[in-house]
Image (cartoon, rainbow, N blue to C red):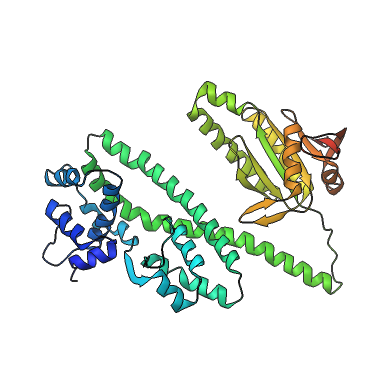
Length: 400
C-alpha cells in the first residue's frame, strides 16, 4: 500500500509541511520510496511535542544519525491504535451532528489533551466517540450527564494507562537497560513484546469491564423486579438506608516519615487487598482511597458493620497499623462514581472520633442493623467537630 505524502503527514500529525521537511533533513523521518508510514506520522507528532518541551530537535536528529536513537519501532502494530487528525474541524462536526461545541470539547479533554478551539481538527479516535453521544442526545439524555460520563471514564482510564506504563517501565524497560542496552536499543527491543501484549491487555480489560457491568446491571435488574412486585402487592421488602463507612489507618503519616514512601506504598497495597475482600464478601464496595484510608458504600447497614469488624480484625492479623472506622446510615447522593451528602460527612466525623481498633456507629446504623449478628455498646451523646447536634454513638462488636 502506498504510504503518506509529506503533506498528508503534516495534516495528520498537526504540524507544518516545513516541519516535516525539517525532520526529513535531520534524518528523523525517511521516505523509503513508497511514502511515509503511520509510524512516521506518530513520530512527527511526538517529536514536535518534545521539541516544544525544550528537547533539542537537532540533538534528536544527531542521535538518530549516529545510531544511538531510533524511532523505527513506532511502525510496530502496538502503535497503530494512535490515529492522526481527521480533516474536519470541531465547528464543522458540531454543525453536522448537532452536538454542542462544549460537549465536543469534553471529548478532547477525555482523550487527555487541552480544550480545543472551534477551528482545531478533530482526531480520528475522537470521531469514534461521537456516535455514542449522538444516540444519547437523540434519546433525551441531558448534556451534563453525558459530560459526567465522559469525565468519569477518562479519569479511570487515565489511572489505568499510567499504572500500565509504570509497570512496563519496571518489568520490561528497566531490565533491558540493566542488561546493557542503550535507550535506542531498549525501545526497539521492547516494541515486539508490546505489540503482542497490547491486544491481550485490551481483551482482559474488556472482560473485567463486562464483569463490572454485570454487577451494576444485575443490581438495577433486582431493583426493577422488586418494584414491579411491590406495585402488584406480591412482595414487601424491608427498605433500609444505605451506610457509608470511613476506615482510617492510625499512624500512617508517622510510618511514611520513619520508613519511607516505599513502605507506605506496600501498606496501601496490603490494605487495599484486605478492604476489597472484606467489603465484597458483605456486599459493599470501596468508593475512593484517601491516602491513609478509604471510603466505602454498603446497601445494608448490618453488612457494613460486619465488614467493618472484619476489616479492623484483619488489619491486626496482617500486622498493619491499627485501623479505626466510622459508620453512618442515611440518604446519599450518587454522582460521578462518588457519594455526597450529610450521611457522608457524618460518617467521616464519626471515623475521626473512633479510637484505634474501634468500629463506631451512629444510632441510625444500630436501628437498621437489627438482624445482623452484632452487638453494640452505647458511648452516649457525643459532640463532634463541625456538627451542630449531639449524636448517639455506639461501638460495635461481633456477637459471641
